[in-house]
Image 1 (tube, one colour):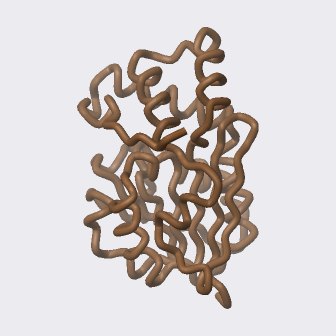
Image 2: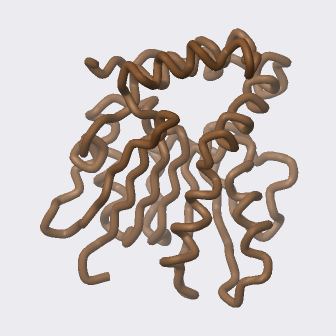
Length: 221
């Protein structure tokens, strides 16, 4: 499938629009079905260090980071995740966690962060924008975890087949299709981010439910 990046309806709605709120619930259910939050938790626990500064890009309503906080509560290494999104700081975001309201491609304060989390956000950007984002984060990051949509016909079939059961609203139905068409295949994402293979090692895997997941680790980090 040729990669096609189109605007998503959610980006045209206000934060309190009923359709946007319903879409956020659909996305939360979608993430639970695909096991995305659990995947972030498991991989973060394997690699986190006490000195790490973590940033979630496209943090939205804070669902992923709040999940990580709950799961991490009994660990010896404290967890602090700052958020970055076009939307304002969500209700329930931990008071001692920072929030940056900005576009991830124009944000210029990535330097404190050495772990980057990206959940269902990078598919919204074309390759030049991803390259610009990659140039910003790879200067200081040692770990990048990204969970996205797999761009293939199986993903489109699963989306179509699941709609009668999941009862997505009209925004979700459109944006899920757009997300798949703009998703990734093979090792596209690390290459689009411009991660030099001599500096980074990565794994990119596609799941049975249409997940596309990348773990990128800086060599000798």
